[in-house]
Length: 259
Image: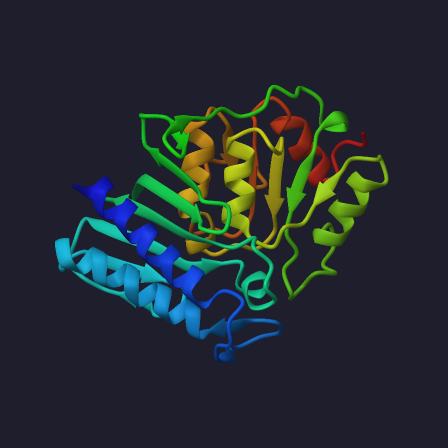
């Protein structure tokens, strides 16, 4: 039942993304630089809420636009109605719906749906990960120097010591391809299916990563913070890899090693 509702919620949010994409819609700005919210974000969120509330009206909801809808429940749905809103607003088809489901503090299920490519990634804890129903696995790349990576840049504190620009420069000066897609949930899923060998970012919110990090782990990858600790969606820094380049990439990110 939980899986069915999660998949229905992903489809409902994706339908709203498709309905508004490349059409005229209202855009407002939240606090901070380059932090837009569109009419489609709200429509997707409400469509997702409606699906979940129909079956589980007493579950806790945490969503990017509304924030916390608190309930006394062991279940929490962690929702990004459109991950990659700037891409969406510019007509770039790299955006998605992301929904993670937490039970007693542990993420047990997650799904990410990009309706533009009709790609639905799903994972259930202990049951593996899939893309459109087919099992996926991380890549087999063993060397950071020969890997293909993806990252994102926050719009604040980008010039901090050992921050996003310094780590990026450290890697690209060695000739390592580092991409920037603008949607962390997609970045994570593309690590899970082997398109990228690793993803790192300095500042994410829970709704950006709650589904994607489980998908990576269930696809055989490894996800930690920048200290190598087990990852929690409630802390900002993330490194997700195929596992084989993880320790070396941690050393590079923390300036302990030069490639």
